[in-house]
Image (cartoon, rainbow, N blue to C red; front, side, top):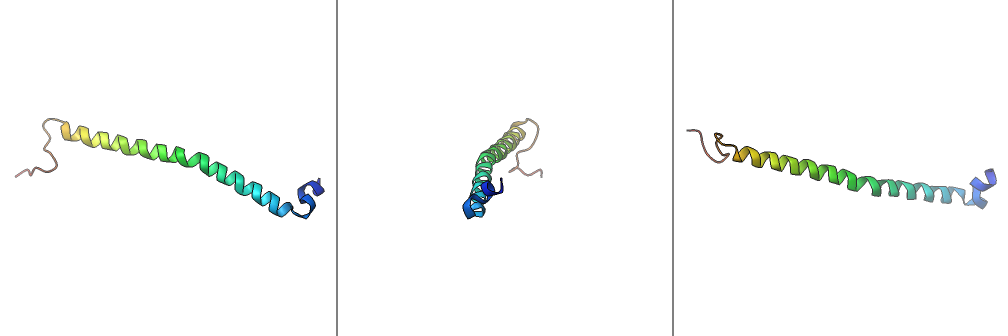
Length: 66
């Protein structure tokens, strides 16, 4: 087993390459999911702001209450 892990003296390079590959693969999978969550949160906030502007009886943000 130790000869397999050593890989003829190149084990450190091979296992480091595998680790980097899997880390990049994980980031490549999670980054779009995080971006999607952030975009959905931004869209919900934008919709909420638009609904607050359209709600009758509330002054628009550019009108003064004087």
